[in-house]
Each structure stands twice: as C-alpha cells, then as structure tokens.
Figure 1 (cartoon, rainbow, N blue to C red):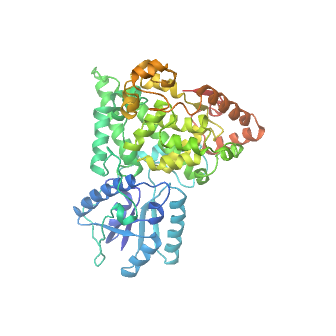
Figure 2 (cartoon, rainbow, N blue to C red):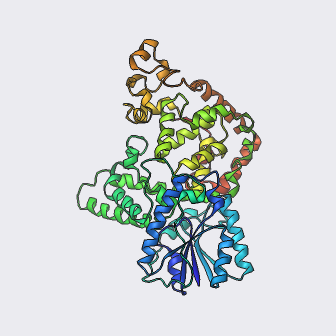
Length: 505
C-alpha cells in the first residue's frame, strides 16, 4: 500500500506524489486533521473553512478516478501506526513543506516512525524552494529550471486499498472551533483556483502593475492567487506555465501589430512577484529560527522590553485613530485579505509608530491572513520591521497612504463608517478638524472615532533614530554581511542590498 499524504497541496492536477505513488500500487489518499496545528495560535476557523471546501472538491476529483480521500484526526505518527496495522505501508509520499516549527517538529517525528518501521518516505519538491541549499548563488536559475519542468500527469485511475474506512470531513465544532463569522472569503478548491488564475491572466490583470497598490483597485486587479498557492489548490509550476503561455501569446499579438494594452508590463510585474514568493519562502527553509528570532541578532532587545499592550490592542481592534490603518485591519477582520502595500503599512505602523515587537503582531495576522504562508509571513514581518539588518527601513506614513491610495475615501468609508461624512480633505487626519467641522460632519473625535494613538512625526523620528543607532554598530554591520551571504538576492549589488536609506512611504 502506498500512502499519499495531502498537506498544503490540496489538488489532483500537477501532483507528483500522487502520480508516482499510483504507478507503484494501491494508493491511499490521506488527509489528517492534526490537533497541534488546528489548536495553534496561528490557526483560525476561516482557514478550516477553506481547507474543508478544498477537501470536498479533492475527494470528488479522486472519486472520479475510482479513488477517494481518507480522513483522520490525530497525531500523524499515530495515524500511520493505525493504518500500518490494518494494511502494511510500503511507502509514504508527500510534497516537501516549508512550514512552521510545529510542522517541522511533526515531520521529524514522522521520519522517525518511518525509519523505525522501515517505511520509505518519498518527499517531492514544489514551489521552487530548494531543500538543503548550500548557497544562494545561482538559486534563481535553479528555481527557474525547476518550474520549467513538465507538469505531473494526472493518474487515469487510482486503485484504492480495501478494508480501510474513509472517515469524514470534520466541522469546526468537532475540532474545538467555532464557525467563522467572516464574510466574502475566497472559496477553496481546484476549480475556483483555476478560474481565478484564468480570469487574472485574460481579464483582470491588464492594469495589475498600476492598480495593485491601492486597496480600492487591488481586490480586482491583483491575482488573488496567494490563498490558492498557500494551500496548494494550484501549483506554482502550473501558474508559471500558464503565465508563460499567456506572455507568448501576447507577444505574438504585439509583433503582429495588434494592441495589447498594459498586459505585458503587468505580467512582467506579476512574474517578478512569483519569484519573490519563492525567495522569501527559501529564507525560512534555510533558517527556520527566523520564525521566532531576529534575523540580525544586533536588534535583540530593541523592542522586546517595551511592549505596550494598549497599543497592541488598539492596533488589533482597529482603533488607532489613523483611518487607513483601521480600515485595513477591519477589512482583514471581514475578508482575511488585503493587498501587499497595505499589509506592509500595517506592519510598519505596528513596528515603528507603536514600537511593537514583530512576533506578537505576526502571530495575530497569521490568523487573519487566509493566505498565511509561514515562509513569506515571517520573512516579510522581519523585513518590514527592520530586523533583517540589510533592507531599507520602510516607514509608511498612514497619512500619505490615504492621499496616495484612497484620495476619495471609497475604501476607508466602507470599512470605517464612522467617517462616512467626513470631507475628503480631512479624511487622512480627521482629528485636525475644528469642533465646528466635527459637528458638521457628524463625527466627533474621541466619541465617534478615536484620536491618533501616537503622533506620526514624533513616532517616526523616534523610530528612525533608534533603528539607525543600531545600524551604526560594528556588530550590526557584521550581522548584515552574514545575512546577505545567507539570504540576500543575488540579482542586486552588495551596496544595494545593504542600503540603509530610510524610506517614508
């Protein structure tokens, strides 16, 4: 009996473990609800809803091939032991996973059980992440070569082992969770994943490069593939293949004199971000400790002992007094998605204006990102918080972002209805309205909407001074050189990678 272990790869198409296992003999397709993951502080019932939707479609796809999905609840080694006692396992097949500490430790326990019982574990790479990478030199070429390889052929038929009960999809209540009350969440499954990819490449993505930064236009113009990639409803290799096919078609049209609008520019920008997707995941693969520890130890102790719980609570509850910050957080509370620039602003505001350590804020947002991908998540949090030691310090102005990305207040007024009648000119800083203006707008600061939790200029200057005080230290410079060698992009010069300019966004 071959066992295919589905984790963050909830699909049938381009699934090499499934394709290879089915060539070896009867194949059990397994999904395990693991209490240690479901009960972790990073997991949310919105994640479970998406997973269950994906499992429902996955099961139907497998049944169309005469197979089926087998569900279990428990520790993975215990599940394997029970299955092995019923029908000896010849091999376990799965994709490699660049997960968090919980899944990393789990995999070590699984590996030990398999060794003890002389069962082979065949792990297949995916996502362009390279395990046991010795150097970042040449990584981009290795990633590109991997993603150009052919897609796996879907098995024409699956022989399911006899005598093993199927189990069933677990509702949240059975796992100690309450059903999510979030609305307009993306639907899980291969079908919506492929529909989303197709609509982006042929319809929605033409203005991606110019519209991805604003929360007004980003929901439609961004690819919206991050959630499907995070849970594996779609493989990175399929996205890259489809992208290259579309680019080739558009170039043929252009060369024939046909208008292609902004398509090629936008798809180049999208292709770059797919590369960054793997780049940041590779960081966690190479150094799992960055889930918990500063990438550059020179920043240890910088924020840890000054954590302000009231600031953290205001940030979590979207009561900071800065309309764009609060609107973005409320959007996440409802929909579990916001575009990248607004994510970066949320993290920047927490890390610099509120001087909060990145770890608690990262854990909080892991639950509110439906596309939570540990490698990208923790690498980005460190980058946006300035603790890598090698990236430009990006301090986003929550005032400037209103003027640049939501000048008419469409996004803010939707998610912060207290400000619905505040004039456009006052929307970035409603606390600066006179009492007469507040009365006229029906929004009294301190009653209907809170005053700013901190003063932008004062907080910005203090954060900048403290960050540069660390960066000037000899130890920080030595750390930066080490981080560049281990994690830096090789497409830029060392001087660019060590750029210490402060950027106000």
